[in-house]
Image (cartoon, rainbow, N blue to C red):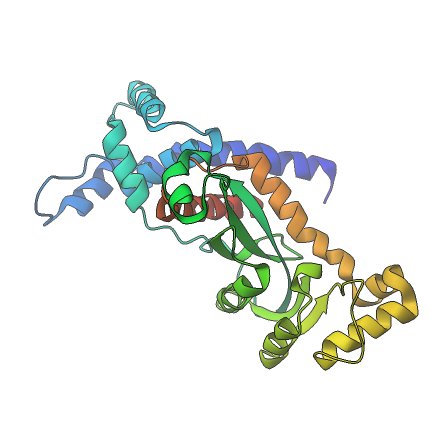
Length: 290
C-alpha cells in the first residue's frame, strides 16, 4: 500500500465517524422501532444512537456535552431530534453491539497474537475499592489479533487480578467462533504447560516465548522443545525460525486503540466498563477495515 493510499484511508475514517448518510431514513427507522411498542416511544433511532456512541468514545464526551452535540446536529439536520443526557446514557448502555460485525470474512487459517493491557478506571472507585482495595484503578483488556489484518478477532475484559493464562481459553474460544485459528503467538506471560496442553488439544500451533529459567526436563513436551531451540539458536535465532516477530501485531493494535480512545474508561461500574470497551472494539474494527 502506497503512502497516498494510506493517507486516503485515514482521511476516510473521519468521514465514517460523521457519516450522516446512514441517518437518511431516520424517521422510517423510528417508525418501525415504535410500531406496536407499549409505553414511551423512542425519539432517536438506533442508527443515530450508534453515531452518538462513536462520537462519545472517540472524543471522550460526557453525556451532557453529548446532549449539546445533538442540539447542533438538530440545527444542521432538523429531522434529527435533540436528545437529553439521561436518555442518551440509557440508550447507549442498552445498545446491543457486536464487536466482530465488521470482520473480513475468510476461511483461510489465521495466526493470532494475544496479549493484555491495563485500562484505567479511576471514575469507578466504588466497586474497585470494594473488590480490591483503594490502590487498584484499572481493568485488563485481553486481545486476540489477526496478525495480517490487525483486526481484533476476540476480546475479554477482566479485573486486574486475572492472569493472562486464565483468560486465554475464553479468548481462544471466541476467536475460533470468528476465524479458523491455526497458530497463536504470545509473550512469556503465556509460557505455561497448561497453555501448551490446551492449545495443542485445540489443534493450534503454539509459539510462546520461553522464560529464561525454562527447563527441558519437565513440563509439556512442546514447551520443552521451545526451550531447547532457544538454547541451541539463541533467542534471535529462535524468533526468526518460528516467526515470533509477527507478535508485534497485537502491540500495534493496542497502540492504535489507545491513540483512538485513550487509556481510560468513562464508565463507573464493571458491567458498563465492559460494555464501553466492547463498543470501542467494534468501532476500532470498523476503522481498521476502512
